[in-house]
Length: 171
Image (spheres, rainbow, N blue to C red):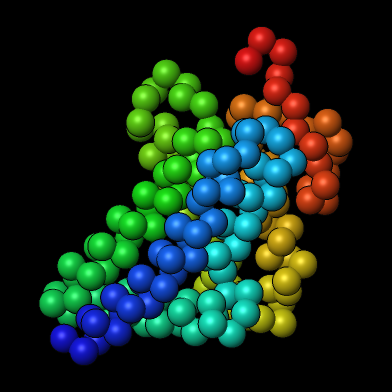
């Protein structure tokens, strides 16, 4: 029970950070520089960019691994996934148009983004010398560029964090 409570506290801390980043994303116009920065800031909250987030990421990974073999931890592990996935779903809804496939397509894109974030998180914890802050930024930016390319096209080439987005003709 103490283990489950400890993980719940970490999940709650992460959700407070994510929830705090949502209003800036929601308040900005999709396809603009401020929206892009708000999304990048939100995505940053998933990653071990400082000591507090690194500790949370380590606890998250340890708990998720433990929950696979200890059924009494499954409920909290499921809650953590649902809550984080709901935030990622809001990001995807803001970035990716419904291609007529309805929620199925958006769910696939949300899982793609979650998988990328989890991979970057794990790599940053396990190989911090390789997964530098600049590389983490580049990966976030390229992931966002890939997702936003389905709705917007960049005016400037590259993923330098200064790209301005334009709505395609007819969109």
